[in-house]
Length: 154
Image (cartoon, rainbow, N blue to C red; front, side, top):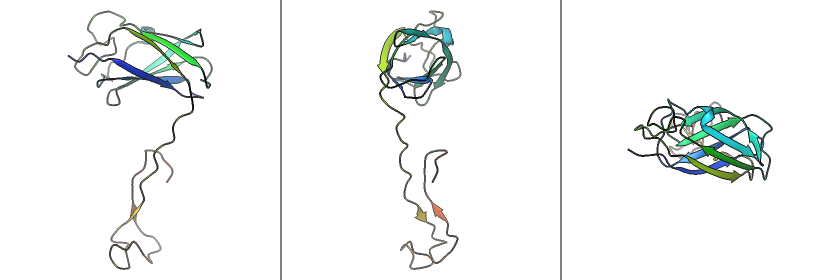
């Protein structure tokens, strides 16, 4: 069994959540309860209000009550397996192995990174009215293809 091991965390300015990363794929169907976590922001206790597990990304995101994060905030947090047993009430890998208890901290340093730039569009061969492959057209409604991040404005 592959016990998930905490590796890092990040929080962004203006958000009321932070995300922890792990070394193996996680069980997203069975997130641990909010009371498995204890957290403080700048030394003040903060209530965890939600836990979201992204198994593929290998992350656990905690939402919390209180003001949004600002630059320089120090987030201190700890996790304890709520039952101590190897069960679904814990951060666990896809094979069911529970994460060990851990504690750590991170400093909020900036806003969310910008999404990657979309790829350059490609003119569909059906719309290429000039020499094939020259990407020139006199079609007033050409078809172009490309990729971009979900919900991105292109």
